[in-house]
Length: 325
Image (cartoon, rainbow, N blue to C red; front, side, top):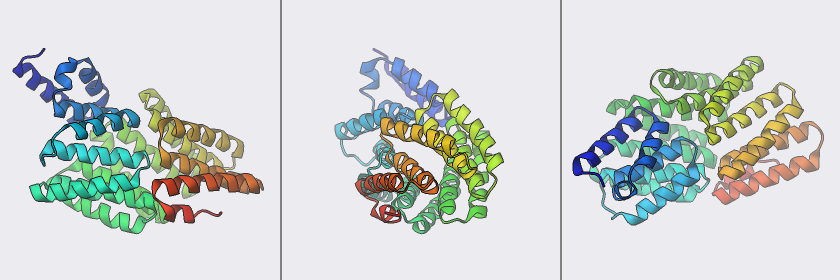
């Protein structure tokens, strides 16, 4: 049992670790805290769930944040808005887009009532991410740009960089590669100085994939190899799986079809273990492309159909209809 002052000190330390993006120590500190203290404080429980998410443990984060939101009174305060936002992010990662959009609508309403512009911006940012996954990259760009302006006005440099990262992926999807490079460069510059290793690695992987699309396959392979090694060193299974997907795509672009198939198969297996639906679908799409190039039409069709089934289950029929079935 901790005294009131000790409990306050623990909350302050946990908030400081989260602000400094030291998620591994954050989780260690909170896992070692007395259970009766941690489980009786909504902020500490939220921060532990946030730490799990940032370390690539989506399923643990989802379980915690769902229990937390169900247990606390639906009072529109900052802690409740933080919980709504985190739950929406996790649901997006795990492919429950309908549930995520409902949470974001509730978050936006609550934030507007409370005049909490920071969480209005978060709701727009994450809605933009959901729109891109749903297959509406142009609308996603509009939402993310609005969120970025709001974060700039608030002086939230980390969130501005996060918007740039996601805008890079949107512009890459619509083949605006030069604009995508500017966005990824802006995100990478911030994360290198002020971000967490996880954030820097995620941007490095997506930027490497962009280089491959632009025909710079040698540079892309080198950049992706370095980023994948970082993900493995961080022991972040989600980042490692994304790295396998990116490297598999890059090998495919450079003509190493056997190597590409092996890594994409590993990414698919990891995505299934982690429960990350979008990763599974994207790996299946790339495997379908590889089989198409090799003249394996039935295998290609099978992979594409499996990807389509995932998109339909996620509530993203537009993405499913984009596939050559």
